[in-house]
Picture (cartoon, rainbow, N blue to C red):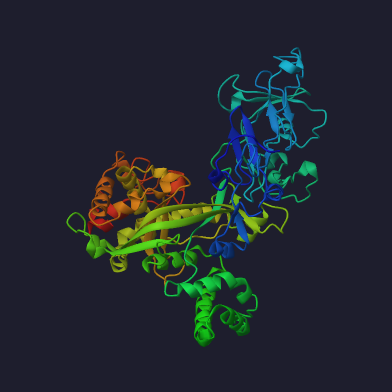
Length: 621
């Protein structure tokens, strides 16, 4: 079915991608359908490339041809192209109940309307059977569902739960009555037409469904795959009972990319234009990275003066080889290698005013050291005057933000047709300020024993649940925690100084955790918003000498005391899975859209020290 409820395009990338349940007004619960149904919509679009987004670097990394912008809904009027395009949804959860009498019904996922109460008479209690059908109220979806760590989702097995063993649903009618004795699970009572009653007490216990012989059936309702519709791929994993609005039901997996000029700045613009127009022809004859020289000779003869053919031929081959060597770094899904290219591009001041990437680098010695020793703590500041970010939805996980599933498997999890060679994405423009920390100063600071101990605490708390779920351990460094926490504090301060809402600013951390031989120690604070806030210019202006010093100084000074201190600064763990130390909502946490790490791995003591030992703080040295 296609919902007629409004959803922002960006929300369909994160947090509401394929496979996510969206709670609309009037108790409407719908799940975003898979890409196969999206493809049917795009097939009707003319011109066919209206919603196509091109980002060569990201496309090669993710193994797709291009990206598609979620279509916007347009009222059918004269002169309007592609009217009435809607994002496809299915109905989930399937179990619905009547808030008046408790009548329960399991509806098909493609049911276009919420069902009306069937008015079953249980012999006792209120019933809608004596109310005319046209006056009976619509059923609303139940709150309880079951998910597995492999990403599958299915309805809570109410009939099996009532009978405490698998039974045939035929001939059994259920009634759900909530809040009769209390607001707890004991107040939610299920009654079967056979006379058996049971509350929801114990439903959320570990392996509660496994004990009644119910395990994951491998359902993927967003793709139309259900056990009741003939799905034979039984998963068999233990199911976890959750409420459909719980935060761990869905984690959108997004890969983002900052647009970088495809050609090095030293390459002549004439050469760039020729290569861009003929790139497919020139590269189609390449074998093992070696170009077909004859193709380049043909292009050079057509485009340049015969007297300079040989000169331009060598220029074409040289520029093309450099680009091909750079693209070879995109063959794996290493986020760190991918970001190293952006890191280098910022520091080399790549791009220009006429491109979607334009950076001005300022050496830290140009900033005033009277309030804070800028030249001691930072090496360079980059004013990113123009940037374009592409955010692509690649898949999702349940229960944990990361599930260890490969990128290819994630893509196949959101579609049936493997011929679909695109992913949903949005492209937004903005600006930013880049901070490069002083490498030598960081190395000296991170060698402290106290800093290592605090890092070990966070690493242990963060990796324990990952290892329990079979996800690869992630090594952490003090530098990463410092840079990440600094980013949160500076975003809060920027929002005070610039007028941006904190949710409009984002962080992009550059820190080498995987490859120590390629050091990165920086963070980009940027605004990439689909509306006018992405191009106000205020963020870059605040990064100029004379402005930035005071902003950084205030951010550090404000971090020295939290309204929850001394509890916050002295804690050994707080937040999800105790993955933060001295960081809480009163001092360092940001809106979820602003943080790359889901508001985890934060510790402001890394910046300002502890009450007992302030000298361990990076900015106190």
